[in-house]
Image 1 (cartoon, rainbow, N blue to C red):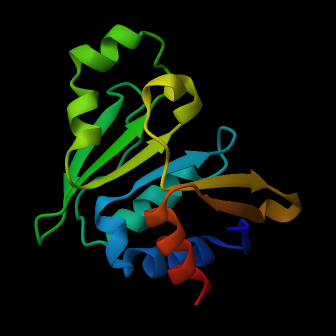
Image 2 (cartoon, helix red, strand yellow):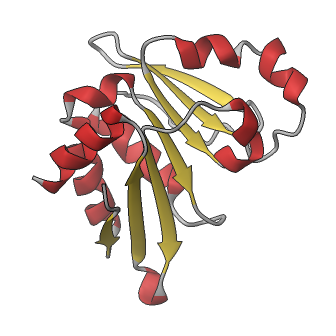
Length: 156
């Protein structure tokens, strides 16, 4: 499936996209990778997506903790990973990340390239590039049947 390219011209556009993605049933068991430079808007997008799914309370980047768990009011488990400081494959085993990725729920990963050899294929990968005037160009790629289903839902 060809990639989908969209533009976020404001934080409102980010929120609108997050709300649309949150309506897709397949998202509940998806693994979504977030690529982009520091400050591109990865955590901002996650915050909007979690809000759209009904998560309340503080949503912060798990840069130091590596993972922050969340749960929606209807019981959806969500894990927000940030592998920016990840550099020890043994930490993967010790922290139980293999079990988290094998369990039901939504997994969102910032800086997945830092743990690439340990991660499963992403259902959906978003690459966020900062353009002039603070516009974000977002390229979405699907690499699994679930990812293709999500992309089709976003295209319709």
